[in-house]
Amino acid sequence: MVYALALSSAAFVGIGNAIQQRAAARAPSGAVLHWRLLGYLLRQRLWLIGIGTSAVGNVLSGIALGLGSVAQVEPLSVTAVLFAMTVAAVSSRYRVGRREWSGVIAVVAGIVVFLVVGQPGPGELDAPVWQWVLAAASIGAITTGLVSLARRMRPQHEAAVLGIGAGMLFGLQAALTSAAVRRLFERGLLAMLVDWTPYAVLVIAIVGILLAQSAYKLAPLPVSYPPVAAAEPLAGVAIGIGVLGGTLTITPAAIAIELAALAMMTAGVYALASSHLVVAHHKPHHRPHLPHLPHRLHLPHRPHHG
Image 1 (cartoon, rainbow, N blue to C red):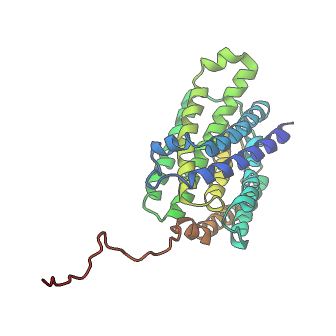
Image 2 (cartoon, rainbow, N blue to C red):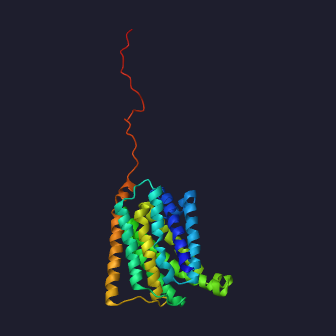
Image 3 (cartoon, helix red, strand yellow):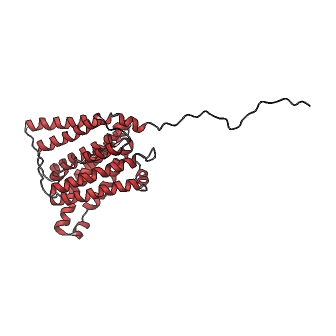
């Protein structure tokens, strides 16, 4: 049941993000990392359809997290990129070629190998507030550093780095959602509403959405979404280990394979960031060149005979 809900969630989230990217790509220039980007998107019907589709996936993910654990649900979230890529391949005006599919496969394969070999254990269902604060502060500091770094990069690399930051925030959001939904199932709606976790989930989600939509504005979906999908489960596993007391296989052989898997994922992200789709994404639309015409037509002066 938990795995079925997680896969269904990934399908809705992937399709929803593909729709969101199409809307975000049309946003005005200069809106990246500004709140006016969200203000613009909230007025776009296509984006609202996309965010609504993703919201359905988030509800399914929340139910799965309430029934299972972060370690069970988050690894399956990376499959969202396959659903998103399928939508992009069908509906995009850009041709998704072998390089893009190879990059996506490298990202997905890298994270899957890492999670299968590492076998992250679930740990506890909740943690003291100070541990959550420490985890949130750590991810917040890393994300701030990523945003600062991204602003100095070219658009394709900036999109990938912003996507990693968004994915880390979504991983934290998933871990907090698990705690909030667990409280709902065990103690009721009122107990959840008087707790701090649902409000932290809302704030983190808004900031994560801003980073993700900025990445979508900067680069097409095959480039901007895989880093989001890859970073989310990694952040979820890290929080599961550091905050909830989860486990990870750390034998010498396992560590070697895990590092190789992370290297494969990194190579996939780099391949996507250097895709020709980014060049096409930022190329201005061709307009026919018209000769310059003067505002007034000057006629030759004819002498007056009288």
